[in-house]
Image 1 (cartoon, helix red, strand yellow):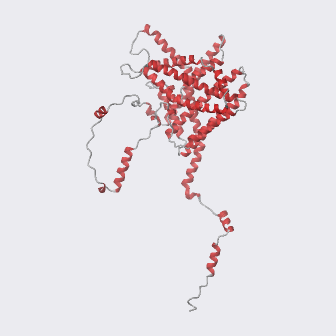
Image 2: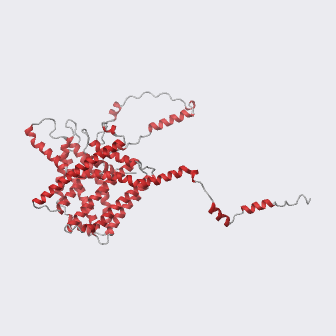
Image 3: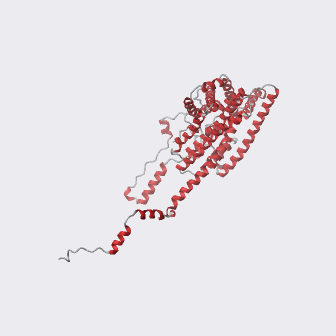
Length: 498
């Protein structure tokens, strides 16, 4: 009995094993200091992370290439208003004056492009005449009397209003151009050319006043003693990163944002030019005062560039978009420039830039002419000679800029293999303002549908054929993604970016 209930003696080897695996602080620290791991076991993940880092490093270079190209596109459209547009208006007036002598031949007094040029010239003249009744100095002192927080709120409201005006402004101008040049044999359903013309003049005048208030607010920020308003306004640019970085973006949405950023950067540079002109006038054009303005101008420009780089770098990172997409955007803008130079072009180049980027040069040109005329006094023959030489310099700059841009655009279009699309006829999509046909007309024009074929029972189909049929039906009902060239070009910066 004693043998049955005798306890088994523990083995010495098991005791040693138990002692070896017994946890202790020393063994834990040694294991943490000496443990190893192999990154090559997860090679795909780390390679992807390294490519993301390289993409973020390439974003500043690729983005600035696009921004510089778009900036010179805006410069070309802006200089067109001051250089070639007056000459084209003079040619149209000469055609009207010499028409009785040469005799009338054809169905039109003027070509559609000449009609649009005449309308643009009249809008500029009338808006500039109305801007003479707006006192810039009184507006500046009225804004300077407000508190810092109120000015910050006003500046944010002006930025929102500028986007809304740019979104709707080009639609007003396009409606005027189409109403004035619409074929006579076609039935018209518009309110007439004159109401559209007054709407366009009123829009350009209001938009010019809005930009003037923006320039006055920026001028107040430059001339404040503690620079607190300028610091707050520049920090507002970094708030834009929060509102856009964490949203879902596709390539088309990023293209719209890039165009909007190009327009905002060019507009901010023109506003800085206006501020510098007003300050130099107050200090009797003393060149030493430029060095006083230089730090503030540098801070504004640097903040714009830094915000754009950070914003686009993180948007491309979070949405898995490569840096090569900016070369596609640049090729799309180049395609607009090249296509507008064709004989059968459907629009003027400046209007094409306005639709792509939301940049409308007419209000900005009216304001700049108003500021220059009030800042620079032209008296005497020598002054008029200098003005004429300055105009010739602007024409030369415009021609050289256009030649270089056209050459670069041809290179970009060839690299993107878009040459075949230049000779394709644009598809005439039905406009939203056209009357929708009735249900009876739609039913009459709809082709007869064949009777449905009897469906095969699902049990008789093998699994592979079922999966193929399901995939085919999904591809059939899936909406195709739009190409960059097929995006609606009308006031693209006003579209909502989700």
